[in-house]
Length: 234
Image 1 (cartoon, one colour):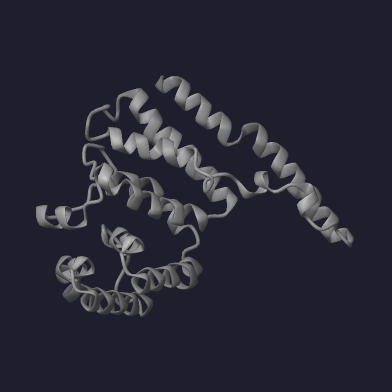
Image 2 (image 1 turned 120 degrees about the vertical axis):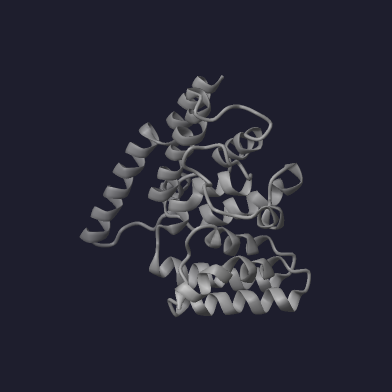
């Protein structure tokens, strides 16, 4: 089945950007059903086109894709958003000069149809980034922070990413994400007085573990990654 369908995916997914709401709704429903039945796989640029439906102007399209990701996809692949976050920044900015990121095979018409590059689409890109971060646990946000600093900020410092007009929006996205509330670790934002007092030994042990974890993360966590990368960048 995949052998028959895969060559047609560019034409099918292009319907997600159709001007007619009914075409977009029917296409999204069909693709989600096929994904849930394992007739399709989220490979190549397909995953990013599904995510891009989060920016659709109609609420029912957005709510459908949100339900699929949160109630179906993340149940099967809990790390998928973290694993694809860095790629999202390269892909949605249409940056193709990196040796490993955004190396998908796409036609010129596909790139133009799904492009979210440029200042005019900055809010749409941030909508996707915020959604992804909102649905990551702390350990994945921590890993994402580290990779943003190493792969993008560090890549610019090391010369693997040339600072040009095409890469500047990607840098701006990265810095915006790093200072966003969504990437902050929930365990660092919560205060002890916000948590109910433990009532038994197991809860006391769990609470102690959380305090230790918070202390460690606060000392070696996101601020140090960010500060070091920005210092090198400047």
